[in-house]
Image (cartoon, rainbow, N blue to C red; front, side):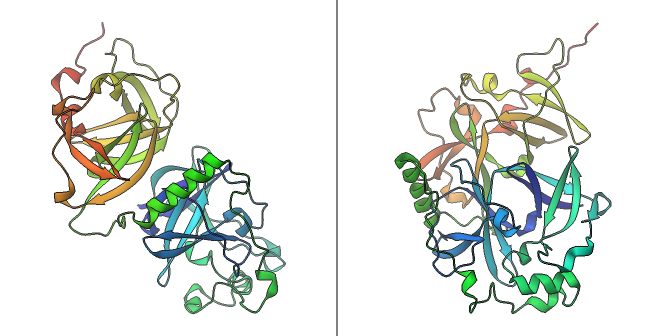
Length: 358
């Protein structure tokens, strides 16, 4: 089984092998580059490294879509030692795929004509929708190299020294662009604030040793942290089938790719008020000992990695949360956020459903 990160761009779904993904960030300000091909929107500063950001629509030969504040940048490793960012609409989930679930992308007789597109070489099925599996290492290749790949004249191994584009071709240089040109002053301020956070953002490469990984989630409008080692995956919100004669914290069951999961409402358990104006958009799947459950969250905001000494004891004042529901406090974007002890919270005897319906 190979884990793929599945994401959405407008009405289409794409996947990349999860090991290629370095991090995901909310859309920041992107600085246009004067001498860049049209499909590169510009660059962002990630801890002092310049990361080119690709518009996948333009790269695929389609019309570019206006950026939205709710978009994100998916930062990926590309060979040999490069990094590239993709503008995406939403992260859907991490999905493990067997080779039997993956098929070659359809081949076309016109593949050697004007627009070869070997970025997608394989496809998979998800929720009755086709997922196009991307080859990240090809996103920055020149048009000539893509033609050669499509026609079988060269192999991916031949492209180690291939430049991103033809530096002598004037067509590669578009006029000066303004990123998110119609952004309001408030939206521009948000983009710039996000960009500043990325400059000093902690390293989030999953290969880090000696650090603990935490997911930063939103729940009832509050930003909270959960240990990544108990999270199996995230998925997009879907229909929940209610279960009769169950406590208020049991929302019902869902069918998640053939597996029936019980959905638990964290709000009454944690004592957090429900906010009608905030609709949960994601499902967080938790593996707790022999129990696997799903919980609704507003969104997944980030994944951060911290040393043990960076995890602070629970604060004296914890608001509506109880001290026995909290493991500690974590620094995040110039503030402290609460680290939930979901293993303890969801193992309480009072939460176990053991009633028999007659």
